[in-house]
Amino acid sequence: MRQIFSSSRLARGATLCAMIVFSAAAYASSPIPAEKIAVAKSAVQRAEQSGAPEFAPVEMAAARDKLARAEKAEADHNKQSATRLAEQADADAQLAEATAQRQKSHKAATEFDASMQALRQESQRSSQTN
Image (cartoon, helix red, strand yellow):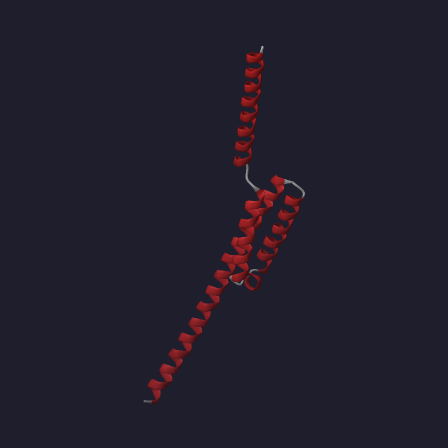
């Protein structure tokens, strides 16, 4: 009788361990909103440092809004919504950063062209007076 009771406990213990392993595997395979939110926060910070608030205000506002909504969804234990919004905030922040970089590059190129034009004009004036 003792042997039956012991093997029954062993079977229950094995079943419980299997359930824990499967639960952990299922949890690990699903996207974790906190990690996605951390990635989005980092992307928003990079975009802010790249000048996106000045050069890409619409994209920056969208990224900040979605990040705030992702944080609220996580606080409300809505993992799917938090994950989705964090991914969108990350994409919006990357777009804002890229837009800012493009605008800054365009501005630098325009300034360079104007500088070159001024040098050409100065060079022509100098050659005409000699």
